[in-house]
Amino acid sequence: MLSEVSNNKYAMLFCFEINRGGETLAIRSVIKQLKRDKRLEVTEFSSDTFYDSEPVYLFKWLTKNLIYWFLKFFNDRQKYSWIITTTYTAGFMACLFKVFRKYSMCFYYQGNRIPPINLKLTPLRQLVHIFLRRIILILNYIFLCALDIIIVPSEYSFKELTDRYNFLRNKIVIVPNGIDTEVFHSISKNKKKIIRTRFGLQDETNVIMYIGRLHPQKGVKSLIGAFQLLTNRNKDSRLVIVHPKGFIQEEKQHEQSLHRYIHNYHIQGITFLNPDLRDVPSMYNLADLVVLPSRVDHFPLVMLEALASGVPFLATPVGAMGHILESIDSRLILHAGSALEIARGIERVLSLSQGEEKKIHLNSIKLVSKYSWKYISNRILSVLRNLNNNRSNEGVRKI
Image (cartoon, rainbow, N blue to C red; front, side, top):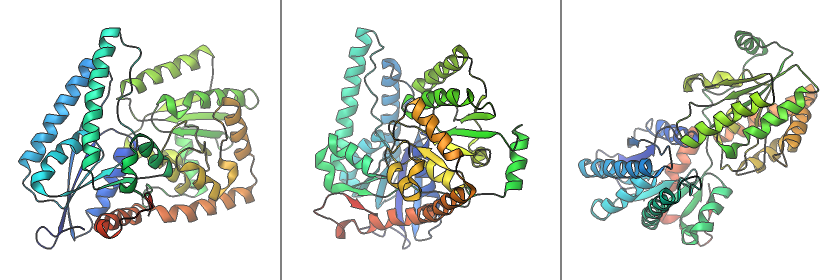
């Protein structure tokens, strides 16, 4: 149970990596909400994220981050009730100091961050990479053993962790991700028309949008292939790909391969945008449909953001997306990630009647209201407070 540390406040320290897409947005949203609670004393530390699996870079990054987190914990004399981390480098150092500082530890898990084996390296570099990866796995295992609780956003996340580490089963609680309803909300047709005009988009143009990182697992190449099939039949469509500036080497390379694919097949009508983070909410107002044909995902924030913005969301049923979209309308689910299936799904949603669109919109708004970050953050706080009383033999617990 959370213990009082000073001035009748509970002290919590959040440790995370910057530029980690939805993971960073999620943890910062939780921090923002908890800082509004006058009963809490919330501190945050952040470090650079992992960008490349090249052995020299990996060694430098790992060494730099371990030293950084050691110094952070060594020099910080604040007495914390909880350390909440999204990164194993901070987690490993936190578990070393836990012996002396007597705090509890929580892993706020949003997906596996262990670098995969890089088969493109030369044999010698690959050997070094495997050695470094083995060290990372050991550090990660020590960290996981020291945890008091793990918060994950979906059943898929629970399965991913327990498939690797079954002993964690009784430590895991499922708390979904949330949405900032003050930032993401639907607007009137007139306002939407003004925003689209600013980007040179006509009212009658069907704007299909992807928002997220350009990672191979997100299925963007298949979406581009689907768009090509659609434009062969209907020229009055645009595909807008909104993505953050690439920091991770794999994502930079994938972006380049997408541009080559578009060039080689002479595909017209595709726009790439990487706006400032504060401009992302207005991007949804350009779209008639947001599509995420991801092969692997946990609980993508883009799903709730699109639904809150009044835009239909079409996606593969991975992670939490399947049961959420099913509760709105099963026609929003892509049962395969092929270009043909995505094209059929897009046509299916864009051909809905006004009555059907309105029903989907009302169902979406009703669902989104249950996922505000204020509510989700309070649930996380409740989980931490009642940890000792909520131990269960059932293993996974849903909040």
